[in-house]
Image (cartoon, rainbow, N blue to C red; front, side):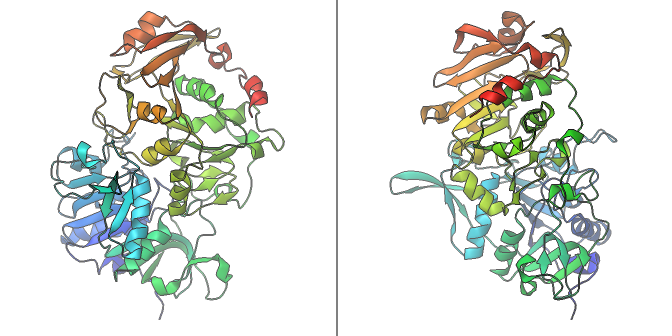
Length: 533
């Protein structure tokens, strides 16, 4: 009997009060048809009610690929546990995602875990173990001493505990069952054997399946096409059909936001790097150019969302990968794509021209094991105690994503972003930076609103860390920030110290100017590319 059904039939068995897990990385590998069907079922018939949703990664963009926003409905969603949330302003409506409204208005129980925990927890659910134990995240917002990952007042339960084991503190995430999971694959035969031959990411697909089936749960897959049984080599089938209960075929499903289908993201073909559009000169580009100076050859480098993700792109633009030069630089993101060029914007998470794609759980084994020695990450706030925040600020509740695992486990850290935000406008004139309009929000805050990582604690353990902006560069010392570089044209007292809510620990005696070529859109990478080791 064929397992291929329509979406409404596939979600019809989900009962009130059950737990639903779902794969997805922004727009990548997002079973949007299934999420929409579930949201429509509740909207049209009032059931199922009071569901708990488990999203290991932020799913959908809340715009073209709505993802988790399909099910962000009062009455349908009781609890949400996620590794990250999607929080953009829709350019058409001017509104933020509906899920963010439910969180801001305390309409649901919302929890945010680091993605390393959301991935590794699934493994423990599949093993029927008591829970996941780790030291990743101690001292951050996921630590029960700092809130235990709660994002709303309704979130009363202790989903994370702090325990002692052999004289050391650990975070412990007790396991609970998943009744239904939604997954995403390229193709399926009538028996539900699934393959990922046309996908840029695998993410949590396999882990969700095993976690659900270990406790008698249902697995529903969304695929692009149906194929005859036995047509594919068994080595291509990553999920056996005996673990799959229903399959929904959607030939029109998007690969990711703004991309219908493109093999350059999974290695089906290669795109010449000279065809990449140049990045316009901006504050973010200046930050990326400066951060690129810290990238070394033959060192696995991992990049986060924002200006950090532009670093490989500006390196490509400046000719650093001519010939086989790209093979000397080892790039990845938290989602398992290796080699090639890390993409930015809505295409972030996958790489262009990748060499390999690793399962999401194994990717966090690599991250937590310290294999990503260099990390470039964003920052929303950086305070006088050396604490950094990217997880909750103002009206934004994005969560940490992979930030905590990456930051705690890397050897060298670079935090990237503009000096202020909220209306910042800059101009460039003959190799100099001019602040046309200062941002309303000071990112160097006296105290962060949320603790995503304690940078000075990492420095005390032997990490090195820098904070890079369009107008200034800081080194992080155990005592605090040291101002080491400023942009040409910038008044240190007015544009740097005057825009901080606290004074840096010190200003370097040999305060340097940032490379003027960063501010003229000329090639600034040649010298340090040759020096990279």
